[in-house]
Length: 282
Image (tube, rainbow, N blue to C red):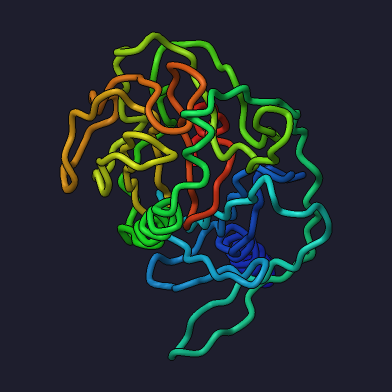
């Protein structure tokens, strides 16, 4: 009888250890420019969690195998250092602290380049409509589909070599400091087809002064990709596109030194290195 009780107790404790919720971070040692993925394992999809990081809150969404995930963008402009990461469970409109830890964000490695622009192109920087267009773009970046549409790894959006990476410090004509690069540039001949890197909905498809002709796709859960400096656009706002679907052609419209595609990825309006999304499934 005592042996049966001992076996029962052992099995019960083993079962409890299997069903215990745990928190995992990827990458284990994040740096500026990375996508931070938080996974809560063995939890019910009915439970609601949020993560708080750097004065912003991020929702979790259910994934397979009774897990929930949250994605946080660590911008190239995020200063390295230690940050508090809190996870709260939402119960009856109250936030109950579920998990807390200080994480260290290490510095990213970003090079410095100079862009040589002709006067016609450099004059685009001072156009008065830039401020209006910037506000319009960020207004669309703040919107979002509250569930994931993307499936698996993202696809390279165009055939061509990488001519500039994410986070590059740039100057124009060796005199004017310019923004850190918020995406990846692929050099390719004008007219080269550009494809949707994953399933999503077209939320913007128009011409801007600096970005040129662009397409913005919403992939759900705050994930959006942008395709800039296009020569032509082949999709309309509101269209659902499949992974690999044709959305435009490479060009040099806007503030551009030559024919190329600028491809960027946003997480709730924060840019990250999109190349990581070609390698890892988030």
